[in-house]
Image 1 (cartoon, rainbow, N blue to C red):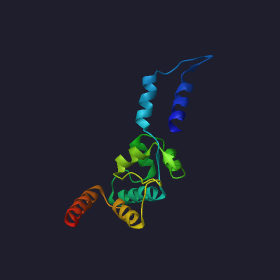
Image 2: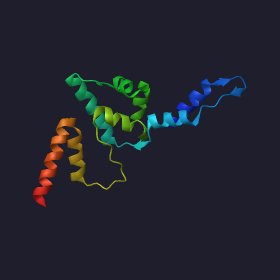
Image 3: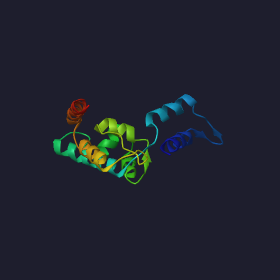
Image 4: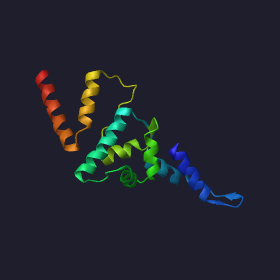
Length: 145
């Protein structure tokens, strides 16, 4: 949806009277590549996003709020506001990269209560702490096998 709106806006700007100039396919592909593909978002992931912004604000890092996050990923701040009402978005990838969040688990993925709780706790950690937890999990797995 965001990609089509962006393309429509660009095509509208290039209109001249009754004649309409077309944008090259390469330009359109560049826009699509920048925005990425749409991914589903879970409520848990949205809560993790809010928690990451609050954590950044408390630690004095950027992005610390929705406006700074929008600026960091190159979109208008209303796109972040609309994100919380949507079920999927092309902004998931850039947000995950910017804030160091893990990708959202989609409802179609099998999950149990313990796994959900583990993901919820790990997602609250910073990037360095998540790396330590991963190392610990690998150690435990080797010990159990």
